[in-house]
Length: 617
Image (cartoon, rainbow, N blue to C red; front, side, top):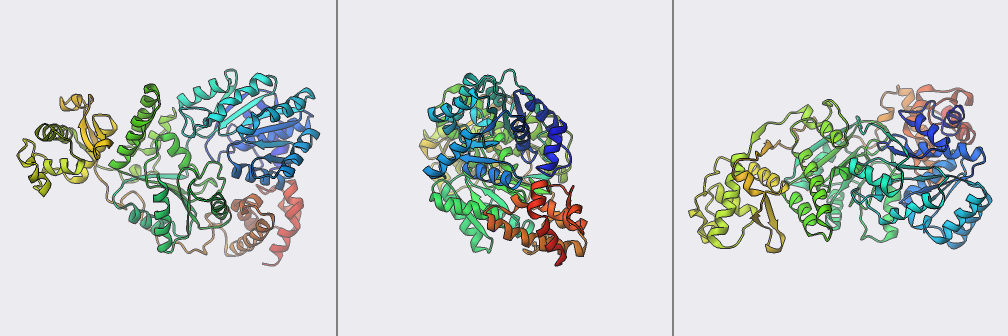
């Protein structure tokens, strides 16, 4: 471990390991298998990068990192080069000659880490290359990143990951470390089984991200709600907005642009070159908002994303946690903000019911959707609910909307029974089903043309729900659809119909408790003045006036270096490192030693330049 700590300090520039990192690193250096669950921003990469360096220095060869995304490989390899580590990647972005050159470096033993996608790792050609290394004792470690992709219960299932069992079968003596930021108990069990990690030691960190404030609101006018959220609370800051469809992505990006917000669209239907340019701009520029489908995000290491917004409800809590975890990787205050509504529940439920999967799988997916809806409708601490889903006990956080502005609760059981009775009676009277709006009109006693046309003002439940607001009834409908007590028939114009689950609610055997609708803005967050686009990042907020001047000069210099190296600025130095230098005001290169984030290679490469910049302030 002295060697590992030396690598941490000299190569990566960090004084001490965090949390369980030291135990993981020691176990893997010693040749043990490991399954690591650690939240985004918790330092997972170091858990295999330091063992890779230590084992390579001990003559044990190269580490193969299985990674699912090209962008992630590029950034990781770029950061390792900056730290002085010999690393490379093999993916489709390389030309034939470039790929051959990397393969030759691999064969010569010139690499400490090689990143590759699961599809490439399991090809006969690549396996033969690994065989040759193995025979020479030059295969040090397999690191399987984003390991939840192996599980059908996970939120990013990729069948190609299943073939990675070949690594254990063919290279049984080579240690393996599987890493993920998101996996419930079912997904963890699937990872262990699919990757044959039954004997691996498990390291499960806290899933808590205390710097993220969780806020969930009812969807009313999503475009207007999002605009207020960004303009009033995150003006000029980087953020990600997730939408369910490509059209919604493009419409929302255009809407934000028209309001003067720097926003870019990203989805799988865009030209690959345009997608890459948009991603590169998001990583390299400040204050951009990326409006995207879930095609964007895995492996995005940008540390200063200040908010993640969902305009549509995700499929499950794992997806929600993974996506919101892209905010605040630098540990500074950030927000996870989501809107949800009845149509979200209907759409997600329909996708499950109409999928070609087996009934067992559908049942699990329905349970995951129910858990997410329970989080959205919760009246207690969001964080306690979220962590509880992953099996972690916690106390109310004081940093979510429910903790900061506790909502009122009401018993919707009576309203639920009346709604179900109305659905039954109108279908009995007309022989056909009707949609949610029409059913609510009947229950509230509204004699619309459609109600009068079908004679539904004569059904026995007409007007019995006059005391309920439309918002209350929509909340009841969401719950009924989510728990399977009411179905939406997509083949018949989204009409409502009863199910087997309706019976328990109608009999009063199953209560329906709901939160009162909270007015937009009353979510425990005071409106603040729009942020000056030229304002310094949060990392520099505590600096003196002189320190802020040093920080601004260092930041401008870092931008020039990043452009010259074609890397995101944070790969050169994080804001926190620049802020630490600015606060210190060093008078010599030697004084930079020990600043968090400055390893030996970076000190050698940039020390003189940093001092030149500081002398010019």
